[in-house]
Amino acid sequence: MTLKKLTSDHIKSRHGFYTRAGGISAGIYAGLNCGFGSQDEKKNVTENRRRVENDMGLNALYTVYQHHSSDVVVLEGAFDPATKADAMVSTQTGIGLGILTADCAPILFHDPKNNVIGAAHSGWKGAVLGITENVVGAMIKLGAERREICATIGPCISQKNYEVGQDFLEEFMDADPINSQFFINGAAGKYHFDLPSFCLAALRKEEIKSADWVGACTYNDEAHYYSYRRSTHRKEPDYGRLISVIAQ
Image 1: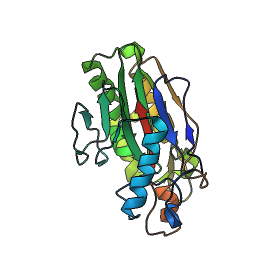
Image 2 (image 1 turned 135 degrees about the vertical axis):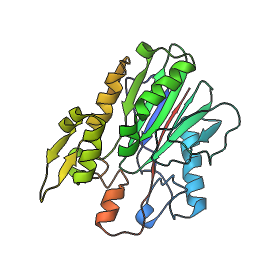
Image 3 (image 1 turned 90 degrees about the vertical axis):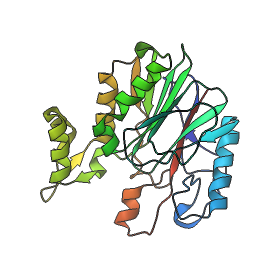
């Protein structure tokens, strides 16, 4: 099966938000599982990543050890994949910056004028801690210009499927009361959080050139996307990880 990916007209460099199509993993991981953090067979994940490298025409594909932070690393030369961070920026050509997700928001960044790229894993923790601001700041340090940066949010969980509790709401309200706009009331005292809208607002606050969301919900579309929350609701033992990649 051919690999399938979503792209954005806003980003002019090579990039893709890959679906689960075209991989060799089986069972609950069926498809293009690219997460070594899963319990899938390592040879399957390795082959899936190789297919992504080939599809993108890369010399190398790099990921980091994501730990729900707002940490950003600059990728220069040799790179240790065990580096703990949730975003990368680079000016290198021929290499791919890869982000793994299964409901959290993958965000790809590009300044085509100054040849700077970035990729971020924005779960709710990284989002509220300011990962978007940190990526833009790191890109500027590499020579990017704020008004030249374009960003796109890939497939992630939508508001109607993201039920949260009171403590979750209060953490966002403590950060800024205006964050109440990203919550709606749910059943039994719960709320629903709008992750893609929160990420879009954070991007627009940085006054970059453009920001958009591809509009795909990982929870809703099992045929194309892995979802941590969906697997949890089904009491499945694990879940696959989608990969989103940008290169120049």
